[in-house]
Length: 206
Image (cartoon, rainbow, N blue to C red):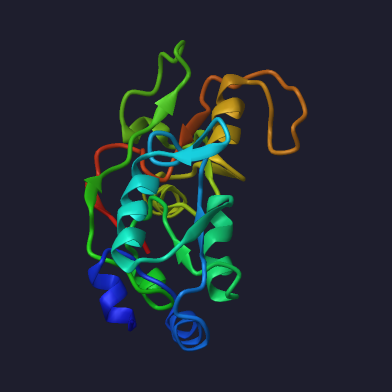
């Protein structure tokens, strides 16, 4: 099975990896990387993984007649893992960006999404994107929110954290990147790869 057939079934893989896997072992178990700390898209439920992305991929795998196992990873590690052949496929929420197209192939989109901002419940100063100027903002490493903040939020202090859960904890004032307790800052914001304002975009398995 070639790469185009895989793409038509809703998955994209690294060009070199697909060739080597298809030549060496067409029926080998596929290793699927996913950021599983992002319900409802991918999350651990008991001893198994569930969520919208996981279920979509499971249907793709059935169409390919391939066995697979999920490898949970932080979002920022997914593309490097694909490039180094540590995984065969990425199934995760991902915005389509020109620089990503240079190193990976995307499937057709399977849903549309956008970005929103989250603030503390006692926030009284942040009500729009314009209010974020010069604020301390947190988001997950490697996500589209990083680029959005750098490009659109003037004079913001950006803190990139390993996962959206870390960002949410920082927002609540429980921890920073070094996991040390601290007092909360009212101007902090947590943004995820599929949340931040209202900018619709395609999401794809890639």
